[in-house]
Length: 243
Image (tube, rainbow, N blue to C red; front, side, top):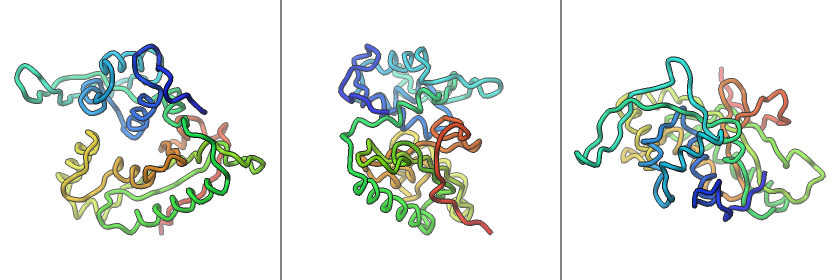
C-alpha cells in the first residue's frame, strides 16, 4: 500500500505520514488510550484529541471488549500539575490501522537495494539474540507483500512481520521493577537510563531508521499486520531455535 505522505489525513490538519508513524508505534502496544496518545504521541500534531477520535470513528482503532474494555491508567492533570490515576477506555490497532501503519510513502527501490536492506535486518536479528541488554529476542519473522513477487524489479518497500519473545535470562537479571520501568519509558517514546531495551526499543533497533523496511506485528495467533495468515501470502525467513 502506497500513500501520499503529505496529503491531509481525514480533514484533521495532519498529514498521512504523521498519522502513519503514530500508528506504527501503536501497533507495537498491546493497548492504547487517549491519555497516552495525547501525552506521548501528540507532539507536533494538530488537535491530537480530535485525531484520536477520528482514528476510532474511522475504524483505525477498535475497542477492547470484556474485562479488558477499560483499565486504570495514569493521566496528566493540568490543574494539579501531576499525574493522576483514572479509568480509561482501551483500544488496539485494527486491521485497517495496521494497513495504514505499513503503508509506504517512499519512492520505489530496486530489488538489489531491498535485498541489501533485508540482509542487514537479519544481521540485527542475530545481534538482538546475543545482546545481554535486550529484554526480548526475535522469535519469528515473515516476509510478505511485493517482495514475494520475483518478477518485480522495483519495490515500494520490504514488508516484514515480526514477533518477539521474552528473554527470560535477561528479564530475570533486570528484575520486574526495572522491566516495568523500561516498558513505561518506551511507551512514552524514551530510552531507559539502565540501557535495557524492551519491545519498542528492539523494534526501533531492528528497523534502524531504514526507509526501505516496513515492520509490522506478527501476533500470537499468527496474524500478519492484522491480516489472517491463511489468506495473506508470506514466507517465514527467520525462526528462533529452541531446544
